[in-house]
Length: 516
Image 1: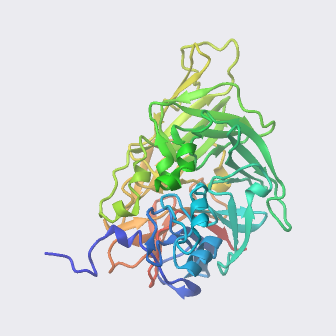
Image 2: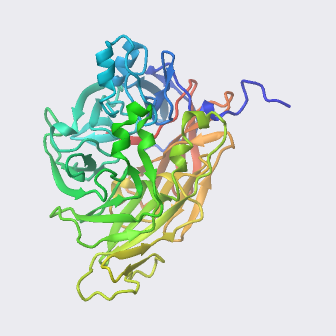
Image 3: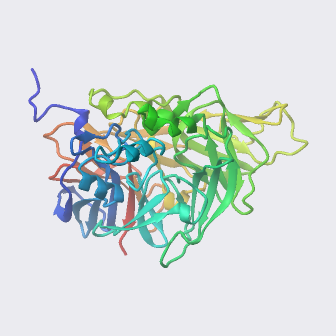
């Protein structure tokens, strides 16, 4: 029997445009019981519009940013949304066409321009602008959204209205910045970006907490790390931080600068310049947060790809690094919109890996033996005759996760036990226990797809996982409305859900802001 059009399961129902925003709060249908202490805003950020005029974006990462807010207050939940009024959005809407290139989409010159203006367009490499559709950032007590460009956009946390545009490059020498900065308890922010020039570097930046006209005025460069290959820097999406160190992964997914420079001539988008070479090693750079000096020891591992670090911490002169590791870049290739529309789920070879780095390496350190002195991990580190330390990883569980999160407020950069994320099949949530090396799964139906979760700590918590997890669940069927899910983080069981009566878009990253 063929499913009717209104009930048929389609992945395009997940990765679809939502043309209507809802700036005024909409009541949700709540079932279950919310904790009395749970009051705040659950925010989502992601691509929400994939068509402008008669043109379409090509990749699921490219769509125009749509911001979402679930307000949880006094046992009730409302939903609202707004498109980010970036320069990209406003100019695209005015022209009724795609004016700016994105990760997987190449824009084309305006046919109304003169022949000389159109010719000049081909000599400008595609760059990312202020379509900040990836993540959220609290900076100097103000809320911003970000993407993998040099720009931030301020957002009103209550109305979701768009505010000022900030440019990292006006204050520090970077051309792009990661969408996963780290915020410390005192408000200090660390991030990393490319600096292209005669010498291409990865620049670690530090932003001191400061209120005033511009939150980036206090930004400084902590450290500059030369790239392995000047015209092929490594792609990065995140990094890790501990009490005393910054951990930057230089992985063998390279950005071919010459391909970017010639992209418009070749009719190619930015993602076509990515080159994955699993035979090249991954390099872990260790930088002192206090002196800004990188370690002189070269830590290498077999090649892999990583979007998201889980956490890192120090113990007994070791740095322990946990991350979501891919054996290839299927996750990038399979999320082209044309592939999503084939209605096939990608098969991701992903695992939660632990690497352990001994930091007390000196002239008398023995070679060719395992230097990891922690009994609870099977990962190894061996000083080789050439002076490099070769790392092998430990697989924590048989089930990998993407979009990993932890109890960030209390355990970022500290020894921890639990992480939470989306399964490789994208249709369930996983809780990883790093102590027992086991996991729990939450799943609704085969038609439901959860998004990134946010962890909210309970008042006076009795354990690391004493709190709730919040995720937005979308469905591939038109007759199954989206809903907000609240799980008990300890039991990993549902305690409440709030059904939404309007269409919603998928999102990349989330944030929870507690209401005072």
